[in-house]
Image (cartoon, rainbow, N blue to C red; front, side):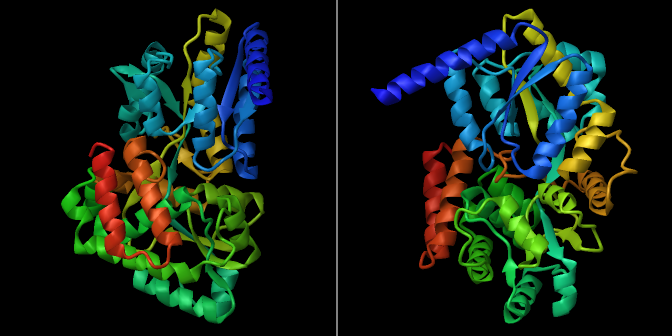
Length: 419
């Protein structure tokens, strides 16, 4: 009874907040950017909107890739108290689009020529049923290996270009009393590691077969067995306290020199920058082992929820427009560690790793090795992605589970999810 009362009170408060917010050009924004660098990037957008006369009401929901936020958002929509806008990955845009709750941005997109300025691989994923229903803030690269240069210099190792070299470097770091790999034991982080191994061992075509198409023959192949063999080897390269650790706390291990490497998307660079670390001085960035020439991407988008309030809708359109402002795209992505979703933003002010990411994306677009991330909801729908996350996490944390058992569980799970 107490729980039910608290829920009712919470929904009443949300409703009253929505009424007050709707009084002028305002946006209530739900997001899961709660680390230091993420908050710094988001503040750039808040300030830009304030200059445009739009009031920002912050609704953060902490947690990983946003799964906690999705649950809160679904409850808000069900109670007819949806926020003005919410952060969402590519497949989440498609899911909310299918439910018919997203505002149509097509007129604004046509007026501003989004089809000419947004990276082409993003356009299908911000569209639903012929309408533009979301706006991309950035493009992240997830196949990065970050390493502490002082640690590497001390131990006398170079960034590994293959997984065999990764294992050799890791053994030397272990012998020097340093944790080789900073990792958080959360399903999305383990899946992120997994997809890098899939790409590094199998190559781009194999990655596409497994992660995008969920091809059963590829999943059952000897190459996939090698992927799980490598993942098992990596168990000994993480510290005993990794379970449940947030990604930014793993990055802190790298910053402090407690760990030698981290395989993580370039949001990690935002934390490195916040710590006043300089690329090629304090830390280095290189493609994850075996993935040179490949670009695994994900994108953060904002979708806007349908409203009958004209002022609120004006605030939504101002926010959508502001997200693609060139100055914002530059300032935000420098702080966030990502690169612009626009293809015509100057990279002059970006650091070495940012410029490298931008150049690598352009090259991968030409060679058809620009690949959507599964761990970050760009390659497949939520049900199939969930199967990968569950199986990979279980395998990594269950030391006596065999690669064949993991493969069998993947195949069975994907069939149940509607492969």
